[in-house]
Amino acid sequence: MTCCKTVLPLAVLLLASAPPPLAQGTHTQIEMPGELETFGVGVDTAGDIAGYYQKDRLRGKLSHISVVRVPGSNVTYAEGINNLDQIVGAYRDNQSGSNEIGFLDNRGTFSNIVFPGAAQTDAEGINDQGQIVGNYSESDSSSFQAFLDTNGAFTALNIPKAVSSAAHGINNDGQIVGYFLDAASTQHGFICSDELLCRAIDVPGASDTDFLGINNRGQVAGWYLTGSDYRGFVFDTTTGTFTTFGVPGSDSTIAIAINDLGQVVGHFSALSSPEQGFMYGDFSTIVLDVTKVSDTYLLGLNDKRQVVGLFGSGSFVAQIEKPHDKDDSNDKMVGPATNALDVAQATRVIHVAQKSTGTGNGANCANAEAVGRIRSGATVHFCQGN
Picture 1: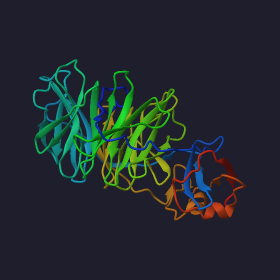
Picture 2: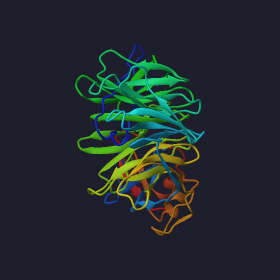
Picture 3: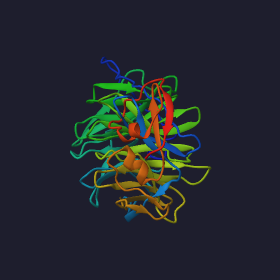
């Protein structure tokens, strides 16, 4: 399974064919000195960017937690969930030994997902049409290869020069995302418009890139590596731009799944502490854990905010509780905000503004209207909200 192997360089494939690669996009990093996390929220026509910074990690709650276990299995990995509550993943039993068998859980009815002739199969993503993506291998020690399963018809996503591949996500338009390992052992993300038309995409400056989830708006969630720093990102396939983020105070952030609301789930670690789940969205990050377990990995998310993942003793499906206007554990207001100034006031922080020339001010912060027009090389200024 790939879930917790996501941070390990599991072999994967690029489907690279004739079409030119998508634009890599540009991004400029903005950080509020000394704070855990900085979020850019809006930009006005003058190029001023408004946002806020986060001092603490906010905590959310998982409810209606149920164990997901394939009958007769020794271990079950639940990895993806669609809006019909169908879950995919992989399991091991006494007969398969260390090899994994893919499965589909259709509201409690389990069926195997096995690529023809494969020694092991891992089902990792499913859309609302029931199309499934994942990876398979032909022997215990062979490299993995991405596949698409459409109503039982399997297609291997096989491209020359690819060492290994894994497909992780598929949306209702049939766009597939995943990652591959090239001959130089470098990991790249890929996106396919169908099983034959695929393009490689990397976060600019990253040594490794992993595409793991895609929603119906064409937004992709994943992680990238620079040096020893793992960070999450959201990639917009329409504009070719990346939005990068990290859980405040973490040393590793792995973003895995994204729903149509733009909410992202994954897992993170901090100071050698156990892995913890998180949800990122609306420019804030919420920690989500299964209580009284050592580790929590969130691997799949649907539009109803149901998640699947792993905890200390197995797999689970749960509901993310709707955030309250007040987070008691942090004594901070985290209610919805209509613009950058409201966000700053609601979270009791100051604005962050960026301007190519001149000095930021409260009015520029309050008038910020759009995200994603950061000017390369601009000077960063800070301004106090009114």
